[in-house]
Amino acid sequence: MWSKILALVLLPILFISVINIIPEENNVEGQVLGVRVAKAEQDKEDSRIKIDNYFVESSTSNFKDFVNDNQLIIYPQDKITIFPDLELGLGAKISIKRSLNLTVLDAKESREYRTFAQNIDEFLKEKSIELGELDKIDPALTHGIDAGLKIEITRVEKTNIDEKEKITYKTIRKEDPEMWKGEERIAQKGQNGEKKLTYEIIRENGEEKTRKLIKTDTSKEPVEEIIYFGTKEVVYGVGKATWYNAPPLSATHNTLPSGTMVLVTNISNGKQVTVKIVGPGIQSNAIIDLSPDAFAQLASLRAGAITVRLTKP
Image (tube, rainbow, N blue to C red; front, side, top):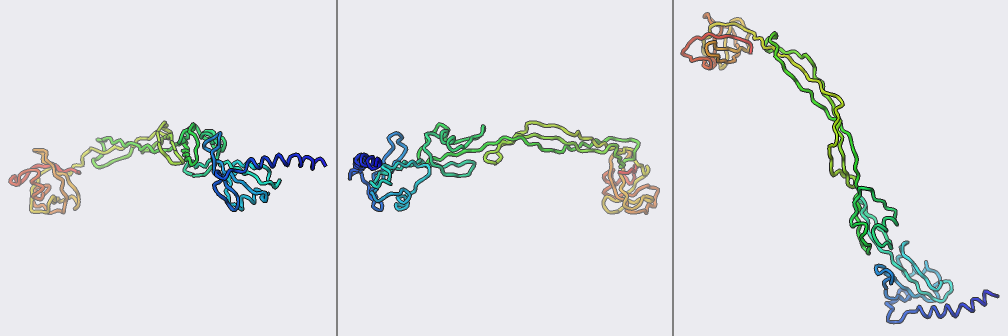
């Protein structure tokens, strides 16, 4: 009984309220499937925000059906006000306060958001988007948010990495007058060393931007290789050299095998030439018979014969 009395008391009040929310004709933009649509207005408290107003008949009793019938897009972040309640069957004013759309490019990954936040800092906290100490953001955190804003976050990472590098050993060559010229011996075998290089690397969105060497540690010292080489000459003899018509830079010798290379030195002036023995055949008392071009490097062909020393090159 009391519920009926209460309904009778409230009904006139709701009726008066409904009358007050019916828009004037000059404020009505049009109709969507029979629903009158008032011109969109700006939020009086926040001029960035747009409010869409709809006026429905008493036959509309379910908001979900209202949205589907009128093919409206409602975002989870939008704020909806309905007065009076649709279930009363008196008709109602439906106001949709539209959230602001924005795009965030986070480490090259794009994502769409909607919000009522005043600035970027407030938006990041609202969406639990955290910035690292080195991360970059554009625009700045204090920048205000308007519809269509694009925010770019660059993720910056600083890491240290170690790399090993070989230290090539040095080769030291030393003379040994007791060894024949042309002979060598390894007194100490060389060994490569190793060092550790520490680099500081800055990456932006996973891409390396800078690399700086900050530390070098030698973990193993290289060992020098020591090689002794002989300086003692192998003397094939000292005597007279003549020349004959032979191939360039060749010579004959009665005891040295063919193919032997011989360094011929003119004792009188120190001039030298290296020749290849092509066989025996000397009929005179000369120890070597040179080709004309080889002899000419030691003395004039008119000299005919000179005193030379034959050694191993």
